[in-house]
Image (cartoon, rainbow, N blue to C red):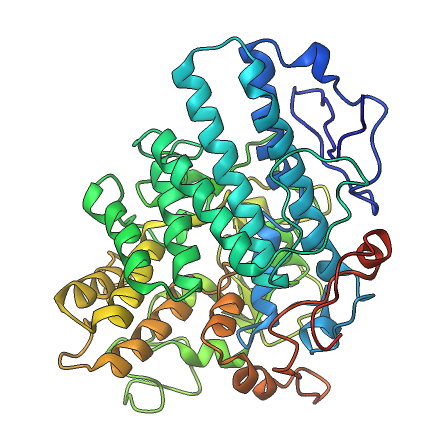
Amino acid sequence: MKKIISIICIGTSLLFLSSCDNNFLEKYPTDQISSETFWKTEADATMGLNGIYNVMTNHQTFNHGRRLWDALSEIAYCKSFPTIAAGIIEPSSGNIVYGIYADSYVGISRCNIFLDNIDKVDMPDQTKMKYKGEALFLRASFYFILTEFYGGVPLYTKPVTVDESKVAQSSKDAVITQILADLDQAISSLPDDVYTGHAVKASALALKAQVLMHNQRWAEAASAANEIISGGKFSLYSDYPGMFLKSGQNNNPEIIFSVRYLNPDASEPTTNEMNADLMGAHSHALAPTKQYIDAFECTDGLPISQSPLYDPNNEFANRDPRLKFTAINYADFVAKAAPLGETGESFETDYSCEKAVNWANAPYSWSTKSDQDYIIFRYAQVLLIYAECKNEATGPDQSVYDAVNLVRARPGVNMPPLPTGLDKVGMRNRIRHERIVELGLEGLHYWDIKRWKTAETIIPTVQDRGGLFRMFDPSKNYLFPFPLSELDRNPNLKQNPGY
């Protein structure tokens, strides 16, 4: 049998284990499952599907590690890839330049293996259809990440041999077409239920809305988001900070899709690139910047440059409550951490990330078992997708105001509604601001400033410690380069422009 491009391993908990092979498309474990003996029972199919989900729990590209992408923007700093954030990006850079590419294709390979074999399994048709829908949704998720970082990429929808994998990249438009086809099939196959751990119809609709928004298909994106809104199965959670802690995540009405963890046997990886507590309150790998702190309005709804409530000597006072839920300054960190025996590592900015930090786990160490789920889609995000896309398509009608104001009026946030009489540009600016303060440090802002084409003006304003300003070359930095090792492996792959 031909060797298949996949990494399928059996773990002790009947999950597929992750791989950190550098040659992720060419190496195979000795305990690879044989398709002749494996794809027989519903239990086999369940194990195969779990194997795809397990890629997300163990690979930095899909879990809390995604939050570090915001450190490529103006709102955060990451000690794990300072040169890449500064704009020094080369095909040999490694780190996330290689990791995002490799991780995504590990997930795609598992999806393709699953979809190629699921029809062999003796199981109820309804369950089989649901499983296929989940795999298609996940494959679309992996390909979407690739298009956001690399543009057009090699497109595989079936398992291929090593030789068959050596193809030129498809155009970005062709990959997006495949993503949307996968999502349409997933939407028709997945149950129209609330989210309890596996993808549901709303999960696929949310991703479809996001993909369409990123490709400026405004009316279609607004329609997909509105289908979730009008469905009435999701709502804003009343406890903003609690939504990012495990205690508030099970059966949460706001969460539409997430990467799930459970202590003690399925906890987050203990690295500062994937563990919410370590990256936030211990290593400070995700450190908010002063520019981000200053973005939050005062409680009167005015920016700090205009509000009489702003006190530069007490900058967290009288501010949008989401500020204190998301970030903490050095003095307050020490006051909070010291009684718990937590000292933390050196601060890279004057602030630490507070979002998704569980202080009950302090003092932290490299054996800390954290289990905060990483939220990929939540209802507030859908409301803001709808507002942005509806505004771009037809202007700021009442439904746009309602969507944004609902996010601002969340219990515990209670920010004033938007001013009336905004034109399309004015509403656009308000929605962009709302995305920063509502979704900041969740890994979405870097994508936002790239799709808004503001990265080239914003990123060079960031001055990191040491006095150096970051760089962003618009002729090439809107995409990552393909990793050098992948170019060596695949001679038909053409490097992205400028690298």
